[in-house]
Length: 129
Image (cartoon, rainbow, N blue to C red; front, side):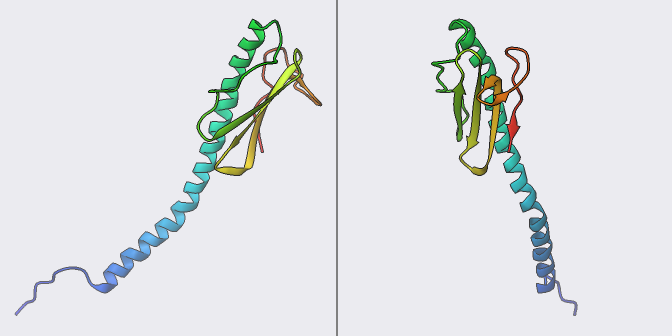
């Protein structure tokens, strides 16, 4: 009499669990790196979006970078800080609450010891550490 086989053997189930474990071990580190890149991208985007807002402020306020409000200019979990040298330039930093080891910055003109050496209104570029 022939028996009908139902279900999986213990060996087959163990092989499937091992394969899933190997795939998870490969995928999880790649996912963590993708999240980091997304956080940095959010910081860079916020800084790049800040440029036209600040330059518009500069134009409408008599060629002065002072008294600019960052309210509503950032993505969730991104904190922007802004410094200016009234009529000569400005700089901004971005941090993300999910990352303590990275910051991004952008500047225009002269801020302290940093000089972009670019024409007026052209950002010095976004740098991330």
